[in-house]
Length: 84
Image (spheres, rainbow, N blue to C red):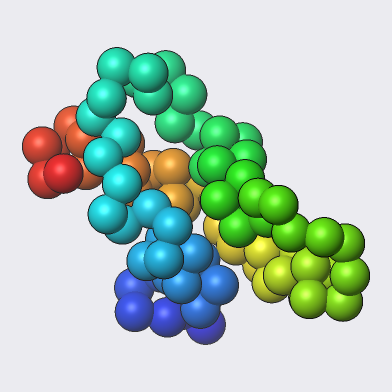
């Protein structure tokens, strides 16, 4: 089941909230835009200075549903096409 053209709701929501307005065209990110980078980037943004606990556990469960490969592919296509 897809959501707004994405694999699922989690993928769409994380892209929208974390990645959609970020400018990845900067030189520092030129070689790092793969699925692992996307997951690390989102987790750092979401969990920065967040203590362990139930809310953090639920957030990790939500993130386990994200298609990080799809987000990386979308970011890289946007950069190649000059959409960002």
